Length: 165
Ligand SMILES: [Fe+2]
Image 1 (spheres, rainbow, N blue to C red):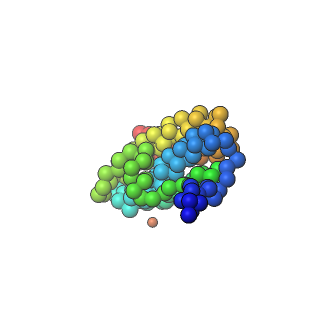
Image 2 (image 1 turned 90 degrees about the vertical axis):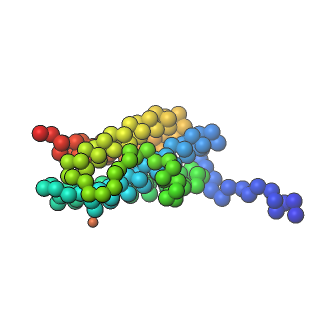
Image 3 (image 1 turned 45 degrees about the horizontal axis):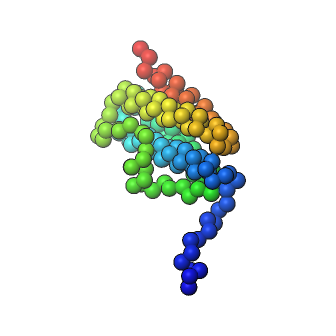
């Protein structure tokens, strides 16, 4: 009977030493929450944008939804590959996402473009911190984060460019 109560061995092994796995796992989990919430906020904006630029912004938002969903999957699966169970539940996202609050109800096209630009700036700031954090723990994860930052910094530029007078 004693054996049944013994702690279960983790089903997924890790290529990383324990401490590196823990630090890298936290970085990936944090990025997962940001990417899931980015996808949700981009959809919220996609449905609620109004104004003269409705069509362009509505379509541009769906591109961001697809990008964010793809990255969420990439970071969750990287976490699994290093032996960390990814947690993408709604309650976990609500508690831990770094996406700035996006107000409900109809939003003007300019308000939406500003909010998405700000959101991408904040998420990119968090990504660059995580790129630094993984420098000594896992270069493979760092490479993944660099690829995400490259894409989201490009996206930030494309959203910000719409605000120019
Ligand atoms: Fe749609």
